[in-house]
Image (cartoon, rainbow, N blue to C red; front, side):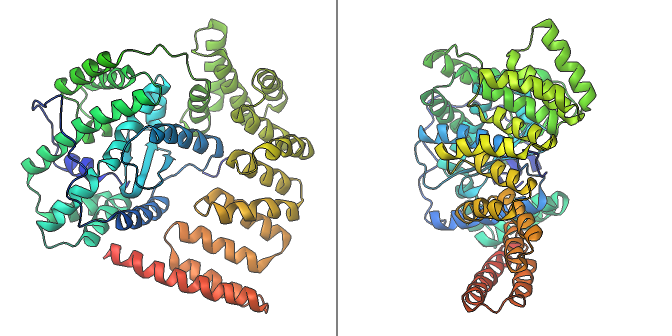
Amino acid sequence: MARFSPLMASLPLLASLMGATFHAQANNQLPDIGTAGVAALPIEQEVRYGNAFMRFARAGLPIIDDPVLSQYIDDLGQRLLTNADGVRFPFTFFLVNDPSINAAAFLGGRVKVHTGLFLYADSESELASVLAHEITHVTQRHIARYMEAQASSSAMTLAGLVGSIALAVINPTAGIAALQTTLGLSMQSAINYTRDNEYEADRIGMKTLYDAGFDPMGMANFFQKLAAEYRYASKPPQMLLTHPLPETRISEARGRANSYGRRNLPPSLDFWLAKVRIQVRYGTETPQALLSYFDSRLQKGDYPLKDAATYGKALALLQLKRTDEADTLMQELATRHPEDLFVVDALTDIDLAKGRSAQAIARLEKFRARMPDNEVVVVNLGNAYLEGGDYKKSIAILAPYARDHEENSLAWNLLSDAYRKAGRMTELHMARAEMLSLRGDYQAAIDELIVARGTTSDKLTLARLEARITELERAKKDLDSLKG
Protein backbone atom coordinates (compact mmCIF):
# COMPACT_ATOMS: atom_id res chain seq x y z
CA MET A 1 0.00 0.00 0.00
CA ALA A 2 1.05 3.63 -0.24
CA ARG A 3 3.33 4.37 2.71
CA PHE A 4 3.16 7.01 5.41
CA SER A 5 6.38 8.07 5.50
CA PRO A 6 19.49 6.29 16.61
CA LEU A 7 19.65 5.32 18.96
CA MET A 8 22.78 3.41 18.16
CA ALA A 9 24.05 0.69 20.34
CA SER A 10 26.12 2.55 22.90
CA LEU A 11 29.28 0.62 22.03
CA PRO A 12 29.49 1.65 18.38
CA LEU A 13 28.36 5.17 19.23
CA LEU A 14 31.10 5.63 21.80
CA ALA A 15 33.69 4.16 19.47
CA SER A 16 32.71 6.59 16.74
CA LEU A 17 32.83 9.51 19.14
CA MET A 18 36.51 8.90 19.68
CA GLY A 19 37.36 8.04 16.07
CA ALA A 20 38.61 4.64 17.14
CA THR A 21 40.38 2.49 14.55
CA PHE A 22 41.34 -1.01 15.56
CA HIS A 23 44.46 -2.90 14.43
CA ALA A 24 44.89 -5.34 17.30
CA GLN A 25 45.07 -9.09 16.80
CA ALA A 26 42.16 -11.13 18.14
CA ASN A 27 42.02 -14.80 19.05
CA ASN A 28 39.79 -16.73 16.65
CA GLN A 29 38.34 -18.66 19.61
CA LEU A 30 37.18 -15.73 21.69
CA PRO A 31 35.28 -16.79 24.81
CA ASP A 32 31.67 -15.72 25.21
CA ILE A 33 32.11 -12.49 27.12
CA GLY A 34 28.66 -10.97 26.85
CA THR A 35 26.46 -12.90 29.24
CA ALA A 36 28.27 -12.92 32.55
CA GLY A 37 28.04 -10.38 35.35
CA VAL A 38 24.99 -8.37 34.34
CA ALA A 39 23.23 -8.23 37.68
CA ALA A 40 22.92 -4.45 37.68
CA LEU A 41 20.72 -4.36 34.58
CA PRO A 42 17.97 -6.99 34.81
CA ILE A 43 16.23 -8.17 31.67
CA GLU A 44 13.01 -6.37 32.64
CA GLN A 45 14.92 -3.10 32.95
CA GLU A 46 16.62 -3.62 29.61
CA VAL A 47 13.23 -4.14 27.97
CA ARG A 48 11.95 -0.99 29.67
CA TYR A 49 14.87 1.00 28.29
CA GLY A 50 14.34 -0.56 24.87
CA ASN A 51 10.72 0.57 24.88
CA ALA A 52 11.82 4.09 25.74
CA PHE A 53 14.44 4.00 22.97
CA MET A 54 11.74 3.09 20.48
CA ARG A 55 9.68 6.11 21.44
CA PHE A 56 12.68 8.40 21.10
CA ALA A 57 13.41 6.80 17.71
CA ARG A 58 9.86 7.30 16.42
CA ALA A 59 10.01 10.94 17.42
CA GLY A 60 13.46 11.58 15.97
CA LEU A 61 14.03 9.23 13.04
CA PRO A 62 12.34 8.89 9.62
CA ILE A 63 11.02 5.39 10.30
CA ILE A 64 9.38 3.76 7.29
CA ASP A 65 5.83 2.50 7.89
CA ASP A 66 5.52 0.19 4.90
CA PRO A 67 3.77 -3.11 5.63
CA VAL A 68 5.54 -5.29 3.08
CA LEU A 69 9.00 -3.96 3.92
CA SER A 70 8.29 -4.19 7.65
CA GLN A 71 7.15 -7.78 7.26
CA TYR A 72 10.14 -8.70 5.12
CA ILE A 73 12.74 -7.32 7.53
CA ASP A 74 10.90 -8.83 10.51
CA ASP A 75 10.66 -12.26 8.85
CA LEU A 76 14.37 -12.12 8.07
CA GLY A 77 15.18 -11.17 11.64
CA GLN A 78 12.92 -13.82 13.13
CA ARG A 79 14.52 -16.50 10.96
CA LEU A 80 17.88 -15.56 12.45
CA LEU A 81 16.53 -15.37 16.00
CA THR A 82 15.12 -18.88 15.72
CA ASN A 83 18.70 -20.07 15.28
CA ALA A 84 20.34 -17.76 17.83
CA ASP A 85 21.22 -18.54 21.43
CA GLY A 86 20.45 -16.33 24.40
CA VAL A 87 17.26 -14.71 23.07
CA ARG A 88 15.51 -13.43 26.20
CA PHE A 89 12.77 -11.20 24.80
CA PRO A 90 11.00 -10.38 21.51
CA PHE A 91 12.99 -8.34 18.99
CA THR A 92 11.77 -5.48 16.83
CA PHE A 93 13.38 -4.79 13.45
CA PHE A 94 12.55 -1.56 11.69
CA LEU A 95 13.64 0.42 8.65
CA VAL A 96 14.90 4.00 8.71
CA ASN A 97 14.89 6.09 5.55
CA ASP A 98 18.58 6.96 5.58
CA PRO A 99 20.93 6.47 2.61
CA SER A 100 23.96 5.80 4.83
CA ILE A 101 25.16 2.21 5.10
CA ASN A 102 24.39 1.27 8.67
CA ALA A 103 22.45 -0.84 11.15
CA ALA A 104 22.44 -0.70 14.93
CA ALA A 105 21.17 -2.70 17.89
CA PHE A 106 19.30 -1.12 20.77
CA LEU A 107 18.71 -2.37 24.28
CA GLY A 108 15.70 -4.64 24.56
CA GLY A 109 16.09 -6.16 21.10
CA ARG A 110 15.41 -3.05 19.04
CA VAL A 111 17.33 -3.20 15.75
CA LYS A 112 17.27 -0.47 13.13
CA VAL A 113 18.27 -1.00 9.51
CA HIS A 114 19.02 1.89 7.17
CA THR A 115 17.67 1.80 3.63
CA GLY A 116 21.23 2.50 2.49
CA LEU A 117 22.38 -0.83 3.91
CA PHE A 118 19.61 -2.59 2.01
CA LEU A 119 20.61 -0.93 -1.26
CA TYR A 120 24.30 -1.73 -0.74
CA ALA A 121 23.80 -5.45 -0.06
CA ASP A 122 24.00 -7.67 -3.14
CA SER A 123 22.36 -10.74 -1.62
CA GLU A 124 20.03 -11.72 1.16
CA SER A 125 22.93 -13.46 2.91
CA GLU A 126 24.89 -10.19 2.99
CA LEU A 127 21.95 -8.33 4.54
CA ALA A 128 21.27 -11.18 6.97
CA SER A 129 24.92 -11.19 8.05
CA VAL A 130 24.62 -7.62 9.33
CA LEU A 131 21.41 -8.44 11.20
CA ALA A 132 23.03 -11.53 12.72
CA HIS A 133 25.93 -9.38 13.93
CA GLU A 134 23.56 -6.84 15.51
CA ILE A 135 21.41 -9.56 17.10
CA THR A 136 24.56 -10.92 18.75
CA HIS A 137 25.32 -7.55 20.32
CA VAL A 138 21.97 -7.86 22.10
CA THR A 139 21.96 -11.56 22.97
CA GLN A 140 25.51 -11.35 24.35
CA ARG A 141 24.43 -8.24 26.26
CA HIS A 142 27.32 -6.16 25.00
CA ILE A 143 25.33 -2.94 25.24
CA ALA A 144 23.99 -3.69 28.72
CA ARG A 145 27.45 -4.60 29.99
CA TYR A 146 29.02 -1.42 28.64
CA MET A 147 26.31 0.74 30.18
CA GLU A 148 26.83 -0.98 33.52
CA ALA A 149 30.58 -0.46 33.33
CA GLN A 150 30.19 3.23 32.59
CA ALA A 151 27.53 3.75 35.26
CA SER A 152 29.64 1.98 37.90
CA SER A 153 32.74 4.03 37.07
CA SER A 154 31.00 7.41 37.01
CA ALA A 155 28.50 9.36 39.04
CA MET A 156 25.76 8.68 36.48
CA THR A 157 22.91 6.28 37.11
CA LEU A 158 21.89 3.79 34.44
CA ALA A 159 18.76 5.87 33.81
CA GLY A 160 20.89 8.98 33.38
CA LEU A 161 23.16 7.19 30.95
CA VAL A 162 20.14 6.00 28.93
CA GLY A 163 18.93 9.59 28.79
CA SER A 164 22.27 10.86 27.51
CA ILE A 165 22.43 8.21 24.81
CA ALA A 166 18.82 8.90 23.82
CA LEU A 167 19.71 12.57 23.48
CA ALA A 168 22.33 11.53 20.92
CA VAL A 169 19.48 10.24 18.76
CA ILE A 170 17.36 13.37 18.94
CA ASN A 171 20.20 15.92 18.90
CA PRO A 172 23.52 14.27 17.94
CA THR A 173 25.69 17.29 18.71
CA ALA A 174 24.25 17.81 22.18
CA GLY A 175 24.13 14.06 22.83
CA ILE A 176 27.76 13.48 21.94
CA ALA A 177 28.85 16.40 24.09
CA ALA A 178 26.78 15.09 27.00
CA LEU A 179 28.32 11.63 26.74
CA GLN A 180 31.87 12.89 26.53
CA THR A 181 31.44 15.36 29.37
CA THR A 182 29.44 13.28 31.82
CA LEU A 183 31.20 9.94 31.34
CA GLY A 184 34.81 11.11 31.26
CA LEU A 185 35.55 8.22 28.90
CA SER A 186 38.88 6.45 28.74
CA MET A 187 39.71 6.06 25.06
CA GLN A 188 41.76 2.88 25.41
CA SER A 189 39.23 1.09 27.60
CA ALA A 190 36.48 1.87 25.13
CA ILE A 191 38.61 0.72 22.21
CA ASN A 192 39.51 -2.58 23.89
CA TYR A 193 35.97 -3.27 25.01
CA THR A 194 34.44 -2.47 21.64
CA ARG A 195 37.07 -4.44 19.67
CA ASP A 196 36.44 -7.63 21.63
CA ASN A 197 32.70 -7.33 21.25
CA GLU A 198 32.94 -6.73 17.51
CA TYR A 199 34.96 -9.91 17.02
CA GLU A 200 32.58 -11.87 19.19
CA ALA A 201 29.56 -10.53 17.30
CA ASP A 202 31.24 -11.64 14.06
CA ARG A 203 31.98 -15.13 15.36
CA ILE A 204 28.63 -15.88 16.98
CA GLY A 205 26.75 -13.95 14.30
CA MET A 206 28.25 -16.10 11.55
CA LYS A 207 27.19 -19.27 13.35
CA THR A 208 23.64 -17.88 13.58
CA LEU A 209 23.80 -16.95 9.90
CA TYR A 210 24.90 -20.45 8.92
CA ASP A 211 22.40 -22.23 11.19
CA ALA A 212 19.60 -20.13 9.66
CA GLY A 213 20.44 -21.50 6.21
CA PHE A 214 22.27 -18.52 4.74
CA ASP A 215 25.65 -18.46 3.01
CA PRO A 216 28.28 -17.66 5.69
CA MET A 217 30.45 -16.12 2.99
CA GLY A 218 27.84 -13.34 2.87
CA MET A 219 29.43 -11.78 5.95
CA ALA A 220 32.99 -12.00 4.62
CA ASN A 221 31.95 -10.70 1.18
CA PHE A 222 30.11 -7.76 2.70
CA PHE A 223 33.10 -6.87 4.89
CA GLN A 224 35.53 -7.12 1.96
CA LYS A 225 33.35 -5.07 -0.37
CA LEU A 226 32.81 -2.34 2.20
CA ALA A 227 36.47 -2.10 3.16
CA ALA A 228 37.69 -2.07 -0.44
CA GLU A 229 35.27 0.60 -1.62
CA TYR A 230 35.92 3.01 1.24
CA ARG A 231 39.55 2.23 2.06
CA TYR A 232 40.75 5.65 0.90
CA ALA A 233 37.56 7.62 1.36
CA SER A 234 37.89 10.93 3.20
CA LYS A 235 34.43 10.39 4.67
CA PRO A 236 33.74 6.66 5.16
CA PRO A 237 30.18 5.45 5.81
CA GLN A 238 28.85 5.47 9.35
CA MET A 239 29.12 1.69 9.55
CA LEU A 240 32.92 1.84 9.20
CA LEU A 241 33.13 4.45 11.95
CA THR A 242 31.00 2.39 14.31
CA HIS A 243 32.12 -1.08 13.15
CA PRO A 244 35.80 -0.73 12.08
CA LEU A 245 37.15 -3.31 9.61
CA PRO A 246 40.86 -3.97 10.10
CA GLU A 247 42.36 -6.57 7.79
CA THR A 248 42.50 -9.15 10.57
CA ARG A 249 38.75 -8.95 11.06
CA ILE A 250 38.10 -9.46 7.35
CA SER A 251 40.53 -12.37 7.03
CA GLU A 252 39.13 -14.07 10.12
CA ALA A 253 35.60 -13.76 8.78
CA ARG A 254 36.66 -15.30 5.46
CA GLY A 255 38.52 -18.13 7.16
CA ARG A 256 35.59 -18.85 9.44
CA ALA A 257 33.19 -18.84 6.48
CA ASN A 258 35.41 -21.29 4.62
CA SER A 259 35.39 -23.60 7.63
CA TYR A 260 31.58 -23.66 7.51
CA GLY A 261 31.53 -24.10 3.76
CA ARG A 262 30.01 -21.87 1.11
CA ARG A 263 26.31 -22.25 0.26
CA ASN A 264 25.43 -21.54 -3.35
CA LEU A 265 21.93 -20.15 -2.86
CA PRO A 266 19.66 -18.87 -5.63
CA PRO A 267 18.79 -15.16 -5.51
CA SER A 268 15.95 -14.44 -3.09
CA LEU A 269 12.94 -12.98 -4.91
CA ASP A 270 11.62 -11.14 -1.86
CA PHE A 271 15.05 -9.66 -1.11
CA TRP A 272 15.23 -8.22 -4.60
CA LEU A 273 11.60 -7.05 -4.52
CA ALA A 274 12.28 -5.30 -1.21
CA LYS A 275 15.45 -3.71 -2.56
CA VAL A 276 13.64 -2.46 -5.66
CA ARG A 277 10.73 -1.13 -3.58
CA ILE A 278 13.15 0.89 -1.42
CA GLN A 279 14.92 2.17 -4.51
CA VAL A 280 11.69 3.39 -6.14
CA ARG A 281 9.66 4.58 -3.16
CA TYR A 282 12.33 5.78 -0.74
CA GLY A 283 15.34 6.55 -2.90
CA THR A 284 16.53 9.86 -4.32
CA GLU A 285 16.15 9.17 -8.05
CA THR A 286 13.15 10.45 -9.97
CA PRO A 287 10.48 8.01 -11.14
CA GLN A 288 11.36 8.83 -14.75
CA ALA A 289 15.04 8.03 -14.18
CA LEU A 290 14.11 4.78 -12.45
CA LEU A 291 11.77 3.83 -15.28
CA SER A 292 14.62 4.33 -17.76
CA TYR A 293 16.96 2.34 -15.51
CA PHE A 294 14.69 -0.69 -15.20
CA ASP A 295 13.77 -0.52 -18.90
CA SER A 296 17.46 -0.64 -19.76
CA ARG A 297 18.19 -3.55 -17.39
CA LEU A 298 15.23 -5.52 -18.75
CA GLN A 299 16.35 -4.95 -22.34
CA LYS A 300 19.90 -6.06 -21.51
CA GLY A 301 18.64 -8.98 -19.43
CA ASP A 302 21.36 -8.40 -16.83
CA TYR A 303 19.32 -7.74 -13.67
CA PRO A 304 19.75 -10.49 -11.03
CA LEU A 305 16.04 -11.38 -11.27
CA LYS A 306 13.92 -10.29 -14.22
CA ASP A 307 10.73 -10.28 -12.16
CA ALA A 308 12.28 -7.88 -9.66
CA ALA A 309 13.20 -5.47 -12.45
CA THR A 310 9.67 -5.78 -13.82
CA TYR A 311 8.32 -4.98 -10.36
CA GLY A 312 10.57 -1.93 -10.20
CA LYS A 313 9.36 -0.75 -13.59
CA ALA A 314 5.73 -1.19 -12.52
CA LEU A 315 6.29 0.80 -9.32
CA ALA A 316 7.98 3.59 -11.29
CA LEU A 317 5.05 3.69 -13.72
CA LEU A 318 2.65 3.87 -10.79
CA GLN A 319 4.62 6.81 -9.37
CA LEU A 320 4.24 8.50 -12.76
CA LYS A 321 0.48 7.80 -12.65
CA ARG A 322 0.72 5.56 -15.72
CA THR A 323 -1.54 3.08 -13.98
CA ASP A 324 -2.69 1.11 -17.02
CA GLU A 325 0.89 0.20 -17.94
CA ALA A 326 1.70 -0.59 -14.32
CA ASP A 327 -1.41 -2.76 -14.12
CA THR A 328 -0.39 -4.81 -17.16
CA LEU A 329 3.05 -5.55 -15.69
CA MET A 330 1.72 -6.40 -12.23
CA GLN A 331 -0.91 -8.73 -13.67
CA GLU A 332 1.89 -10.58 -15.46
CA LEU A 333 3.80 -10.90 -12.20
CA ALA A 334 0.66 -12.07 -10.40
CA THR A 335 0.33 -15.01 -12.78
CA ARG A 336 3.82 -16.18 -11.74
CA HIS A 337 3.73 -15.14 -8.07
CA PRO A 338 0.07 -15.09 -6.99
CA GLU A 339 0.88 -15.56 -3.29
CA ASP A 340 3.70 -13.03 -3.01
CA LEU A 341 2.57 -10.18 -0.80
CA PHE A 342 4.84 -7.66 -2.54
CA VAL A 343 2.77 -8.33 -5.65
CA VAL A 344 -0.55 -8.34 -3.77
CA ASP A 345 0.30 -5.00 -2.14
CA ALA A 346 1.18 -3.38 -5.49
CA LEU A 347 -1.99 -4.75 -7.11
CA THR A 348 -3.97 -3.13 -4.29
CA ASP A 349 -2.29 0.22 -4.89
CA ILE A 350 -3.12 -0.01 -8.59
CA ASP A 351 -6.75 -1.00 -7.93
CA LEU A 352 -7.23 1.92 -5.54
CA ALA A 353 -5.56 4.33 -7.98
CA LYS A 354 -8.01 3.18 -10.67
CA GLY A 355 -11.05 3.37 -8.36
CA ARG A 356 -11.43 -0.42 -8.13
CA SER A 357 -11.69 -0.77 -4.36
CA ALA A 358 -14.21 -3.62 -4.68
CA GLN A 359 -11.71 -5.65 -6.71
CA ALA A 360 -8.95 -5.02 -4.16
CA ILE A 361 -11.28 -5.96 -1.29
CA ALA A 362 -12.36 -9.20 -2.95
CA ARG A 363 -8.74 -10.27 -3.45
CA LEU A 364 -7.65 -9.29 0.05
CA GLU A 365 -10.62 -10.96 1.76
CA LYS A 366 -9.51 -14.26 0.24
CA PHE A 367 -6.05 -13.76 1.72
CA ARG A 368 -7.52 -12.69 5.05
CA ALA A 369 -9.43 -15.98 5.29
CA ARG A 370 -6.05 -17.73 5.32
CA MET A 371 -3.92 -15.04 6.99
CA PRO A 372 -6.21 -13.26 9.47
CA ASP A 373 -3.35 -11.64 11.40
CA ASN A 374 -1.00 -10.79 8.53
CA GLU A 375 0.00 -7.10 8.59
CA VAL A 376 0.16 -6.67 4.81
CA VAL A 377 -3.26 -8.23 4.32
CA VAL A 378 -5.06 -6.61 7.25
CA VAL A 379 -3.66 -3.10 6.80
CA ASN A 380 -4.23 -3.14 3.04
CA LEU A 381 -7.76 -4.46 3.49
CA GLY A 382 -8.61 -1.84 6.11
CA ASN A 383 -7.25 0.84 3.79
CA ALA A 384 -9.21 -0.55 0.82
CA TYR A 385 -12.48 -0.38 2.77
CA LEU A 386 -11.53 3.13 3.87
CA GLU A 387 -10.84 4.23 0.30
CA GLY A 388 -14.10 2.61 -0.80
CA GLY A 389 -16.09 4.61 1.76
CA ASP A 390 -17.06 1.68 4.00
CA TYR A 391 -15.76 3.23 7.22
CA LYS A 392 -17.61 0.84 9.49
CA LYS A 393 -15.99 -2.19 7.89
CA SER A 394 -12.58 -0.51 7.88
CA ILE A 395 -12.89 0.16 11.61
CA ALA A 396 -14.06 -3.39 12.28
CA ILE A 397 -10.87 -4.71 10.67
CA LEU A 398 -8.34 -2.16 11.89
CA ALA A 399 -9.47 -1.61 15.50
CA PRO A 400 -8.83 -5.14 16.82
CA TYR A 401 -5.58 -5.35 14.85
CA ALA A 402 -4.30 -2.07 16.29
CA ARG A 403 -5.19 -3.16 19.83
CA ASP A 404 -3.38 -6.47 19.36
CA HIS A 405 -0.37 -4.80 17.69
CA GLU A 406 -0.19 -1.64 19.74
CA GLU A 407 3.16 -0.53 18.29
CA ASN A 408 1.89 -0.55 14.70
CA SER A 409 1.69 3.17 14.02
CA LEU A 410 0.39 2.67 10.46
CA ALA A 411 -2.64 0.75 11.73
CA TRP A 412 -3.38 3.51 14.27
CA ASN A 413 -2.95 6.14 11.56
CA LEU A 414 -5.46 4.49 9.25
CA LEU A 415 -7.84 3.78 12.12
CA SER A 416 -7.77 7.46 13.12
CA ASP A 417 -8.65 8.41 9.57
CA ALA A 418 -11.53 5.93 9.54
CA TYR A 419 -12.89 7.26 12.86
CA ARG A 420 -12.64 10.83 11.56
CA LYS A 421 -14.50 10.08 8.35
CA ALA A 422 -17.13 8.10 10.26
CA GLY A 423 -17.65 10.99 12.67
CA ARG A 424 -16.76 8.89 15.72
CA MET A 425 -15.01 11.65 17.63
CA THR A 426 -14.46 9.94 20.99
CA GLU A 427 -12.66 7.05 19.34
CA LEU A 428 -10.79 9.43 17.03
CA HIS A 429 -9.20 11.18 19.99
CA MET A 430 -8.45 7.85 21.66
CA ALA A 431 -6.68 6.59 18.54
CA ARG A 432 -4.73 9.84 18.21
CA ALA A 433 -3.62 9.42 21.82
CA GLU A 434 -2.15 6.01 20.99
CA MET A 435 -0.28 7.44 18.00
CA LEU A 436 1.18 10.21 20.15
CA SER A 437 2.18 7.81 22.91
CA LEU A 438 4.18 5.75 20.42
CA ARG A 439 6.31 8.86 19.86
CA GLY A 440 6.73 9.43 23.58
CA ASP A 441 4.56 12.57 23.49
CA TYR A 442 2.58 11.50 26.51
CA GLN A 443 1.31 14.94 27.49
CA ALA A 444 -0.25 15.48 24.07
CA ALA A 445 -1.72 11.96 24.29
CA ILE A 446 -3.24 12.75 27.69
CA ASP A 447 -4.67 15.98 26.26
CA GLU A 448 -6.36 13.99 23.48
CA LEU A 449 -7.98 11.71 26.06
CA ILE A 450 -9.17 14.69 28.07
CA VAL A 451 -10.82 16.02 24.90
CA ALA A 452 -12.31 12.56 24.29
CA ARG A 453 -13.73 12.59 27.81
CA GLY A 454 -15.77 15.64 26.92
CA THR A 455 -17.37 13.95 23.89
CA THR A 456 -19.08 11.05 25.67
CA SER A 457 -21.36 10.30 28.60
CA ASP A 458 -20.97 6.53 28.38
CA LYS A 459 -19.84 5.33 31.81
CA LEU A 460 -17.80 2.39 30.54
CA THR A 461 -15.97 4.56 28.01
CA LEU A 462 -15.31 7.21 30.67
CA ALA A 463 -13.85 4.56 32.96
CA ARG A 464 -11.59 3.33 30.17
CA LEU A 465 -10.45 6.89 29.49
CA GLU A 466 -9.59 7.52 33.12
CA ALA A 467 -7.66 4.27 33.34
CA ARG A 468 -5.70 5.08 30.20
CA ILE A 469 -4.93 8.61 31.39
CA THR A 470 -3.49 7.13 34.58
CA GLU A 471 -1.35 4.71 32.56
CA LEU A 472 -0.04 7.48 30.34
CA GLU A 473 0.77 9.71 33.32
CA ARG A 474 2.82 6.88 34.78
CA ALA A 475 4.54 6.30 31.42
CA LYS A 476 5.30 10.01 31.11
CA LYS A 477 6.91 10.07 34.53
CA ASP A 478 8.97 7.00 33.62
CA LEU A 479 10.14 8.51 30.33
CA ASP A 480 10.91 11.87 31.95
CA SER A 481 13.25 10.08 34.35
CA LEU A 482 15.31 8.93 31.36
CA LYS A 483 15.38 12.40 29.85
CA GLY A 484 16.84 13.74 33.07
